[in-house]
Image (cartoon, rainbow, N blue to C red; front, side, top):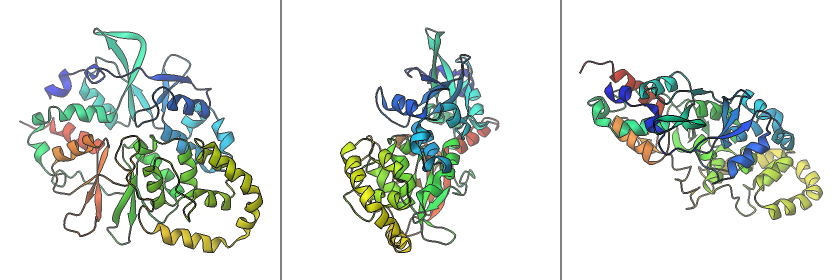
Amino acid sequence: MSLLQTHDVSDLCIGKPALRWLPQSSTVADAIAELEGNGGRGPDAAVAVWDGKGDVAGRVCMVDVLLFLCADDNLASPAAALQATLSDLLAAGAPPVRRIEPDASVLEAVDAFLDGAHSLVVPIRERRRAAAGELCWLTVEDVVRFIVGSIGLFSPTASLSVSQLGMVRPATLAVAAGDRALSAVPLLRTALASHSSVAVVTGGGFRPRLAGEVSPSTLSSCDVSAAAAIAALWAGDLTGFVHWGGATPNATLHDPRCRLRRRNLLGMVDLLYAGDTSCSASFSSSSSSSSSSSLSSSSDDEEDGFKNHASAPCAWRGHKQVMGRRPSEDAIACHPGSSLVAVMVQAIAHRVTQVWVVDAAAAADELVGVVRFLDVLRVLRHHLHQPI
């Protein structure tokens, strides 16, 4: 008990940068500019939304923007969605944040995450005093990393397997590789709030095969063009798109432009090539002359062609990594017999907040379930109430 009670959350915030602010009246485009400026994108990049009274109304990261642009009402007019306010974006389902004082115990931070807070806002201390007006983000990953540093204090619980501890929960956040990536949008909202990811699976039956994942943290490392990829691609292809850092291959059956044009989502092309105006211009010049013929072609044949090819997991293979991180399709997995401490170290090493559990005896990676950081905190929190 002493580890979590005697350490303040300020101990976990040492070296963290002050959060960046935007008022609620700022636009989604303003948030994108702020997220992409001053150091670029990344899983930790986020903007605090000011409530007008000196407090934080919410937290916006790139994945919040992508999910907002992919909402049904915004797909047809992404330009208008980019001009929506951050109040509109938060109302669309951004996960809640909570303020906690720097002298609160780490145990209080654990309880806050278990009570539903997605991120904690902590005043920054300078020489044991809070700096005037400066705040920082505290994440569930920060807390788990702190616990790993003193994991021996949680023996013997930490040495037990995740199966023995009852931590393996069903992988309900899953989408078939041949399904539209848009079908994963509501699942990604749940994954973002619960510090987890969406599994991309192949095969049927009770235990499908784990082919990859779509992770909110990985999407946060993308640019706004990922919204167009989500709107155009199949789930299996989306992992490849993110794996290539948002770059599209040469004109192939998988070219997202074809699908965006067929679905009359030409406005998404500007997002798809937001960082490559030459591609956008060349496509825009040809889209008007070819759109009528493409839209009049047999959509059934095109659908079948895409779907048959999408049944092969991760169509766009390569060795390029996104922002120095692991390829998104290389989903981090363990076995039911893996120890809790091994799973924690594995997750921290790969900068993920959950680990998939696959069947150790199966020839293929049959998906058994998932272990999340929230499950880790819940088990270790329960450990503190057990007699020594």
